[in-house]
Length: 259
Image: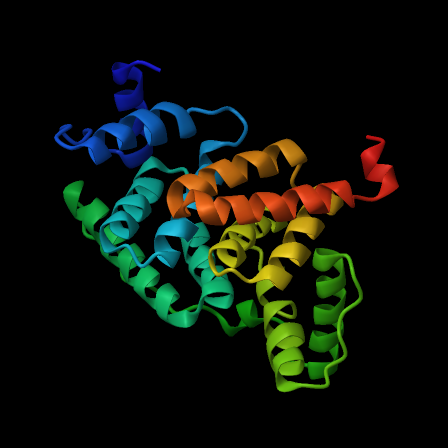
């Protein structure tokens, strides 16, 4: 891709003028990240934003967090409500401190976007308790077990430990995965990125395998996720993710292999 085309992609992705080239890092960033990676056709720009956002948040990169949050919101590719759901999902898979930093960036950039437009942002409103799901514990745990099975394609674990009972079945799958703010496919993309940069091999295997075997993410799309992830979190971790993907694809069900 030409320099002009790479610069146009930079503008489309980050919603600002390209950085003046003064170092080898800046040169490669423009030519590779924007000239090649973001221009690939295998994923939508929104999908690539989810991977990039998860990675910069996981890397605790203050400048990129602010830049990528602002660009995602300002472009309209990601709505504010979707971004806030992403913060909650990230908290589950990468920890609450990282999510706290990310939510602060969302609030700052949302306000700044409006001020740059000459507008005053509206105050944030309290959410209804209705969004928290069922309050009947038996109903909630039953729904959590079903969601776990639907997402992971294996039976839910018994609730014999606080981690499984209060955490996995009650909250992660009894609530978060069922929230309507993101699609299941989007949650899969975000989760794959998070568990991969956290080197969490068991969740990597389960979430990559389930994403592919469910058909929610195609093999071609997963290959693009690997490339996007590698660009934003490093090719060593990308290689580990690629190994998990290739193993999961080789072990796919016979019915999927025939499609």
